[in-house]
Image (tube, rainbow over all chains, first blue to last red; front, side):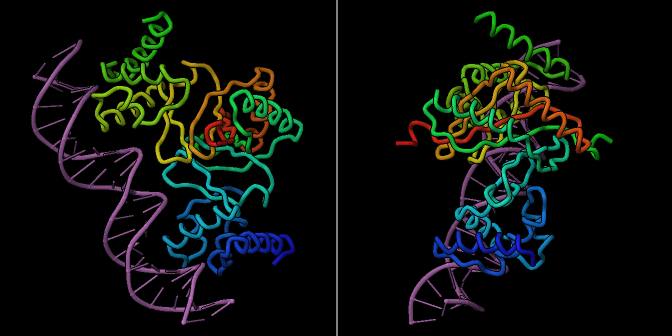
Length: 148
Length: 148
DNA sequence: TTGCTTGCAAATGATTTGCACTGCT
DNA sequence: AGCAGTGCAAATCATTTGCAAGCAA
C-alpha cells in the first residue's frame, strides 16, 4: 500500500468515525476499487471488481460513504448510477461523457478557466438568492470506440 | 398564440414530420407546457399542468419528442427526470440546482466565457479521441427557500 | 385500410428496506 | 452485552411496454 492510499483510507476512516461508523473491510474494498479507477464506476462494475461484495450491502455502504463525504454519486443518462471518490480526496475535475455508450472519463480544466467560471457562477447564484456550492461540467461527445 | 410560439410549434411539427410522426394535440400540449416554464419540468408537474394527459402516453410522447430533437431529458439527483425544450429551440443555457430541494433554474453565461469553454472542451475531447458534442454545466447551491 | 396514437393494466429493473445473523468493541 | 454491519429475500417506485381501441391520411 502506497503513502497516497494510506492517506486516502485514513481520511475515509476519519470521516466515518466522525459519524460513529466503522471503516469495515467491505467499505475499504469499495474505496480501494474507486481509487483504482480514473473514472466513475457503476455498481455492477464494482461488484465485478470485488467479487464477494453483496449488492444490497454495497448500495448501503455507498450511501453511508456518500453521507460521510467520502463518495460522490454521479447521475448519468444510463441505467446505472456512477460512483467516484469525493472531490476533496481526488481533486476537482469534470467529466467527458460518451452520448452513445455512456462511458465517462475524468477531465481537468485550466485553473485560470476554473477561476473565471467560479466568478461567473458566484454572480449567477447571487442574482437568484442561491448560496453557491460547487459545480460540475459534463462535456458530451462520442468516444473513439463509438465513432467506429 | 404568439409568433414565437407559432415558430416553436412549427419547428416541433417539422421535426416529427421528418420521422413520419404526427404533431398531435397531446404532443402540442406537452411542448406548450415546457415552453411555459423557464426551467426543466418533471413528469408529475407536467401532468398537473395539463390534466387529462395520461402518464404512460406522456412518457412515450416525451421519448418520441426527444428522439425527434424537440425535447431534452435532464437527469438530476432527485427521483424524477426533468424535461425541457431542446437547446436549439430555446437557446444555450445551464442549470442552477438546489442541492437540498432539487429545484432547477436556467442560467446563461457570458458568450465570451462560453467561447473559452468551447475551446477548452475541444482540446480535452481531441486529446481523448472524442468527437465533441455539447456540454452542460450544473451550478450547485442552496436556494433562497432552503437557506431558511 | 393502414398505421400512428392513446390509455389501461401489467411488467421491468435499479435501488431500497425488513429482518435475522454475524462480529466488532 | 450492545450495537453497527451484512446478506438474503421481498418491497418500492419511476419508467417502460403489451395490447386493444381510436383516429387521421
